[in-house]
Structure formats: C-alpha cells, structure tokens
Length: 68
Image (spheres, rainbow, N blue to C red):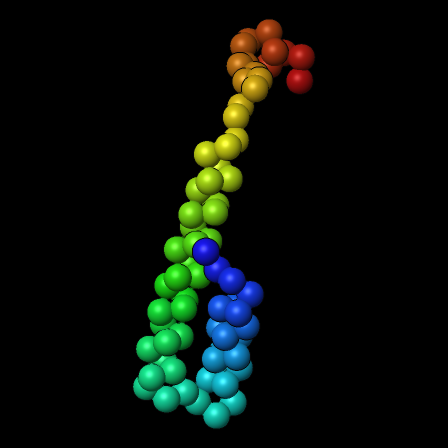
C-alpha cells in the first residue's frame, strides 16, 4: 500500500532529480519507490475492474439495426 509519505518522497526525489540530480543511493531508492507505486496502482486498478459487472448486454439483430 502506498502511503502519503511514500508519495511525498517520490515527489521530492523527482523534483531533486530535475534540479540538482540524485546520488546513486537516491536513484536506487527512487527506482524501488516507483516499482512499489506501480504495483499498488495496478493492484488497485485490477480490483476495480474485477468489481465491474455487466448487467445488460444489447445484442444487435437485424430488426434493431433497422431502427437506427
């Protein structure tokens, strides 16, 4: 799970990378944080998609096509 502190750290490292650059340790930390963030994002998206239920499926027949 991604915490606000992790997001703040990701943002801090991204800003620092754009301005003065990162050390090797910070680059490694940023890579780990990005991987954790992406994994959590994908898990959340998958959970949301798994909850989608199609309740009505409209099948087009020749009669329905004539009505358009």
